[in-house]
Image 1 (cartoon, rainbow over the protein chains, first blue to last red):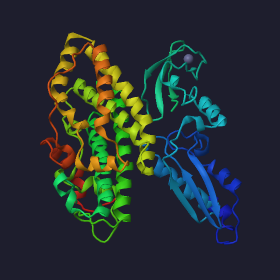
Image 2: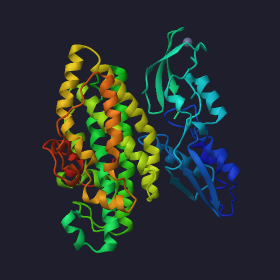
Image 3: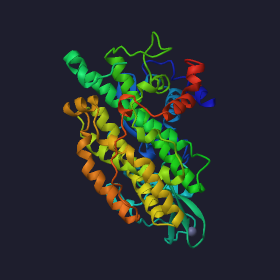
Image 4: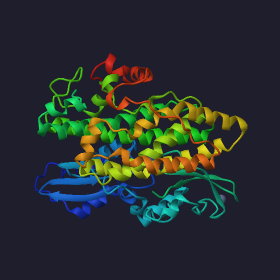
Length: 175
Length: 280
Ligand SMILES: [Zn+2]
């Protein structure tokens, strides 16, 4: 692992001072294993970063209760911070307030679109999202699309099809 | 494992009651979600069409995830309060969520009878999910206000998922009820099979009564009106009759189960029973 090599000068240094901003930057380099184009910061999974002395506490929240990626995400956070010289890491899982797609960053939505997944439309507190949302086809940009299934390849996605270019596509559902 | 029944209430020291009621209450929520999640997962790879195979598997995943949150919390309460909780193969270590799912026997499971019934055909599975989601939605709505902040947090998290399950299963009940002659007939059959288990949802066990009195749990008797309203509306749209037969089957909440639960546990728990404490 060349990352370890690059940074190993920092590893044993107990006076290394971690800055919160730096931790957020590092977390933005940890990707969601199920939607690998999004960082966990883009997704809004990281809720809080607290630094007390040398201990860095990171609060994360699951997207869905059964999200199988949470354990992998915790491990990846740990590994990535370790590789960057942060050794005292505490990861806390919080369920409340419940995760919502409203926390997804604008940058994240653009990345999703470029990747071929339609980003969430509207705000989760607006109950309209349950009704007929108009989702833009990520392939041809047509708004003439239809819902095939409310449940897709992962918990966070629904399956749509474009009536114009006929391509089926994933929609990251508003939640 | 400590059970609280009405007759025993007086004998238990007062300060122990809240913790025991909390443990039993949380296990009831966990077991119900786990068993229905397990039942739904039996459809994985066998769904009528790919999209619906994925849908029912997703619902299974949500339910098992919710069960995990409840089991984790139960384990935390047991460990923190050093409650004597007898489980095979667990000595000299803290209890985990897995122990609670894999090492308790039929009599200790507190799930609703409704969720352990065999899947039957797609219509039966759909109707059971609809009955359950309509109930779970109302339950979580109230549980969000629990004085126990972790139960409230799990409810807040889970209700968003349940909203999807309810919407999806309602639409399917309508589609099948108001579909072909055969699908209509199968839904009538499903009503016949499952209606009898719906009374238990609103019949509180002793630990639910204690939990409700402590305002950590929900008084399930108060949910019945809104549930009937929802069920009546959906069945009407599905052109299905609202059953008038009494729904008297109960006992799951206190460990009196149908013969089906044993088979589920035998399959689900086999590995941990055969190879205790094994890890991935
Ligand atoms: Zn298109």
